[in-house]
Image 1 (cartoon, rainbow, N blue to C red):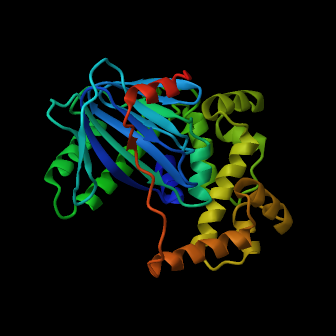
Image 2 (cartoon, rainbow, N blue to C red):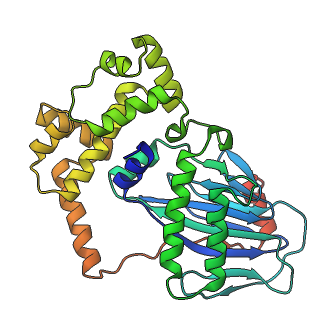
Length: 336
């Protein structure tokens, strides 16, 4: 299994669209900080808008996707002058549509989120730029643009199976974002899953295949056919992390998956991910996840039982249209 597919499987991601926005004129969509294990995203199909967050602003063009892997609070704003217009929320079988009344649509925007598995999913998304801004390209025949067009068609069809189809399309879209060419990435920071350094990719895939192996810097450098110093330089540049830090992250993701999916004792899982000492594994796992392996397994099983028994959970956070776009825009810009 390739690196990106392996990472997505371990993270147990589930994507969905919360609302489709067909808007005109002045608007501000308020997106509060999300709960742990939730990563909101916005996919712009038509028009132009701005995403504002603490410390920055991003201009979205058609075909752009922006995601906040750590659930950062943000707002989506219109980027042009115009009058405030009334909106209506139309229900749908899979998600509602927020539509401007009595005006031709300027913006076609999907707002959704990825739900991450505790442990593995959180660890993966901690390694991604926040925010992550990419272009899916302008060619309508490119795979990512075809997927976004299918999402639009399903939203318009609004029939049986729409929710399942859109969820699957969201997952496929994320895979394309994570593997996309570096030239398509518009945000700052390193997106290691899309590195074009084949030597680094070989090393990462080797660790994924054999996490139990006693990997050394010299061994990984030999696998990449580089000197130790050259490998360290290439690896840090490609991933944004030190080799040892990255190796620990990968091992903890695999360990979290084994704790959820198997009945193996913690000591056996420690060995399976390259630790000869249970205490060393416990310390590394606690530092990565803020909990012990035993408590992590217990919490994961409690959560699974709660889902099976249809326990009540809080509804997901959804973008909220501000009643006064000018006041919201002032707030985003730091004006009183």
